[in-house]
Image 1 (spheres, one colour):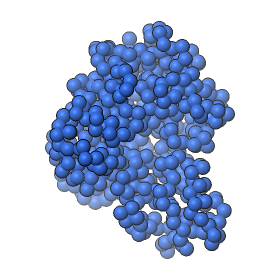
Image 2: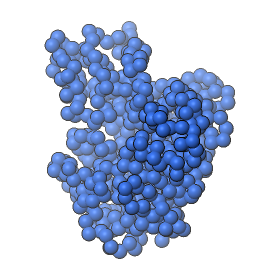
Image 3: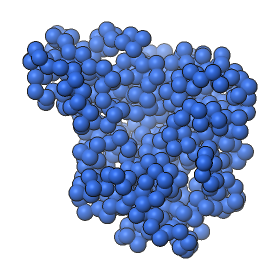
Image 4: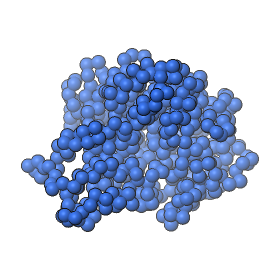
Length: 501
């Protein structure tokens, strides 16, 4: 019954062939089978359609991680809609921008935020879903019919829009098609050897491509089970490990797990694969993990616009400090302007393949800047490729900061700080951090000698999601500049590289 919907047809194979197989084990809660997962998704698809959702309409979602939220993702796509997940840390003013830009037909939020967000909904129907999977979205759904016929959607129809930082601080909506998501997850299932025998520890958030489109989709496509955790919890992950086979995480997962004495080769003995991404994994973390568990972490590279583009190999050498090779079906080149660099030289990564997004929502000029007519996407990430073909990321041309797996663009924070009383200017940088990979740091030049760091922190806390807030703020007399007057962020990063030890 799912054949007409390109992505759902692929993700629902487990529900068709093994409906009683457990999809999610939830500590303290009942297991959820593949059949139950998709029955719930069908009910939600029907609910969305009843509320007026038309093919191509957006469903904006800012909720805690639950199985019901996964069903909402599946139900949205099943109903022909476009899923728009939003970070739970976004403030009201940030959500207002996304609503104004994407003009969703439906907004689903936590009940505690409904009063705040309803006036910002701009005509969208507002429903609620809480951390226990309850709310107005779910009202009277239990026991209703599950015979919803998925809306026909093809490979090139949009399945999701994910917002990513813009070069001017304005977030851009990356448009991802059914084929973008399906092809990438299918490649990862094969490359990482996922099967129905796997049990994946799922501790990633599902408002991000890593947790939603890598972890969830790979599990569904392979027919694997998951240990579905609401958030990162080192104890819960260690509890799950003896009966699990795989973990997908960000570097912070691994640095924190290394702090627990329970992490031993014996405890990790049933595991076959540890994967890290969304931020650079320090070589030291890589080596410590191998020493403690006997496993080499498999590091990969991707971004919102491309899903995954490269991966270290499953069988061959997983080389610390690199992100491996292009995935099957993905082309990669390293460019300087319009020319490819020679082997070993640094340039900007460009990728092409079915994984590459369809462009930026309502931003044709920005799309034309970053997506070439022949399909090559200019990532803005600086890298080099060695004689063996391994790709090493050496920096980001766009000054993006990746902290704990989340993207932060400095311009947004700088604009906020620069508008505060007593501030002349600011520069926001990312510096190495042992836990988060990178930490956001603000360097501020004051006009008021009495300006206090605390007032700057308070202003950031009022307007920015927590992961964007600077972990350190310093007030200085001036910023380093070149002869053309441009602030030298590279010099700032080098000067403060050891700030967090």
